[in-house]
Structure formats: C-alpha cells, structure tokens
Image 1 (tube, rainbow over the protein chains, first blue to last red):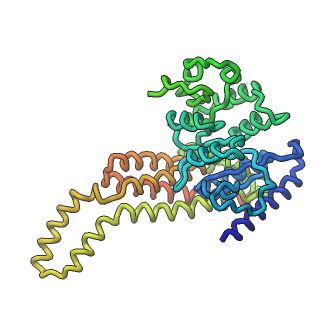
Image 2: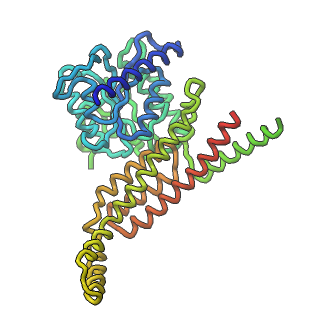
Image 3: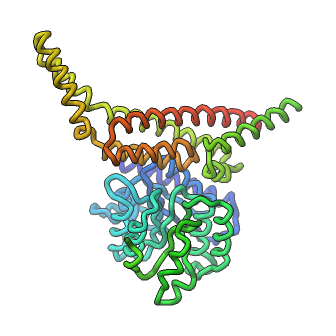
Length: 229
Length: 177
C-alpha cells in the first residue's frame, strides 16, 4: 500500500518536472513546491491544476495523515526518500474527516523542522472565529472556497515574489481590489494590508469596515478579541 | 462551414442561458480558464469526477435519511405475530416512528454529506445545486426530517438538470473545438 502511494507520488513529481520543462515560464529556476491537502476529489483536481498553471510543483494528498506521512512527521518516521523534496508551502482544506486542517496546522507549527513552512487554510465557510483561530495558530492566510486562479496567483506573488521574501506588494493589493469590485460575490480571499504588518498597533476599524463587500475577512497579526462577537 | 458557424452560435447561446438561469456561475468560467493546450480535457475531467462523486453522495444521503424506517419494520416482521397483533403493532409503531424519527436519524451525518456536496458543486460552479444544498443544511440543523427529505429531492433534481446540461455542453464543445 505504501509502495503504491510512493509510486504515484513519484509519477506526480515526474509529471510536474516534465510539465515545468515544457512551460519554460518566467519563474525562477527553483520552483515553489506546494503540498495540497483536501479530502474532496473535485477540489484536489482543481487545486492541483491551479497550482500547476502558476508554475508550482504540486503534491496532492487526501488527508492530514497522508500529509504528515509525506513530510515525515508521522510517528513511524518512515522517510521514503522524499527528504530531498523541500516543501515551500502547505495549502490545506479546513473541514476534513479524521484530522482537520486546523489540527494539521497545529502539528506543523509544533514541529521544529517544519514550523517555518507557511500554511494556508481553505474553507467554504467564512466563519470569523474559525479564521481567527487559524491565524492565531500561525496560518499564513485563509482562502474562502471556491478557490480561483486570482487567489493562487496573488498568494504565490506575495509569498514567493522576487527574492522569495514576503515583501508587501502594494501592486497586488490594488489588483485585488480592482478584481473584486466588478464581481460582487462575497467569497474571496484575504490579502495582507501592508500597513497592518508594519505597524504594531492595528486599528480594528480599518480592516473590518467593509465586511459585506468584496473581502469579508482580513488578516490581523495581532488578535483582536473585541472584534469577535 | 456554415453549419459549424451555426453550431458555434448555438453553443454560445446555450452556455449564456446556463449562466443567465444560474445553472452555472463564475466558478465554471474559472475552470475554463484552467484548460489549455497542455491540459485540453481539464473541464471534462473535473466535471466527470463531480458527477461520479455526486451520485455516490446522493445515494449516501438517501440511505442515511431512510435507515430509521426500515429497521422498525424488519423488527416487526421478525416477531411473526398473529394478523391482529401485527395490525396493532404496525399502528403503534407507526405512531412511535413519527415521534422518534427525529432522534434516530443521524442529522450530523446527513449534514456532513450535504456539506461535501455543497463543496463540490461550488467548486465546479453548479450554482443551483449549491444553493439547494445550503437550504438542505438548514433543515438538517433544525433536525427537520420532512424538510430534509423534500429538499433532498430538490437537490437531486437540480443535480440531474445541471448534469444533463453540462453533458450536452461538453459534448458540443468537444466536437466544435
């Protein structure tokens, strides 16, 4: 059973590498490797394609346990020879049977080896307390499903832009605002406000002012409990 | 050549109507964006997975709402009572069932299935199915068995409608392009 998993992962990695060679896109020579976790078959297919089309190496797994196994974080310490494949980003669904995305996030942030890897949570439910909990636990971002191409592009840009620093790209923020204004759908992902990261005191009013418009959620570095009900 | 042009126009009209009537929403457009020469079958693949997944979910949903009913009757029949006794027992159990169904159906399980269905339909852009799932979830939260059964039928209906339309759409698009 494990052998099959390894083999299918190998195939995926090979496919990715071949695919990336064909693309010869403008991305860096060292591609971003993303580990995607989702229990839904449909969502796995979509997120895999979204990431591949933005020139990322992708490994998709269907559960938190599998993700931990892949990272080598499970109890068995079974390193199946994948230590060489460094994971640059983990993107996981929140609601999953067995281990939820939140539990997976805690496990990753609790590990000294993998704590530094940014984790992004996806969820179809736009629940503020859930978002806060994840961000407090160390999640990098929270994307509301269904995930769009613009979400992934922006994520990649602000996380792995030039020099692979998390430098705030004001251009991408503007793009996001322009993008979301024509489409009035309430589901969209959040993006970091440059000012809120630089200043230690975040004003509660600013991020929360347009809750019902394009971005109902905002990322706060400091947890503001007065914002909860 | 004119025939192709006409077919293309029909395709465009058809897909426009699907968006207008909310069978599909923007997420379907997102899927189309992900399809290109390097992956020309992407939409078909995702939609096929969605169809398969959904059939299974609908079956699971139907059985999770019905299990309480069948068990009672099986129990009665196993007792092999006399005809009069059977009639009395049936009547009593019918009343009991009406009362107890709310407690026997695992609404949490049902809600879990509906959540999955809502998620997958949302990911492919099947807007009407998604909306029906949202309402069905409300009935689950209220533990309203009657509402759940009724709305499950609606969800099923919407699913088969959009399935039909998507199959037509994809069939035409494959022949045209």
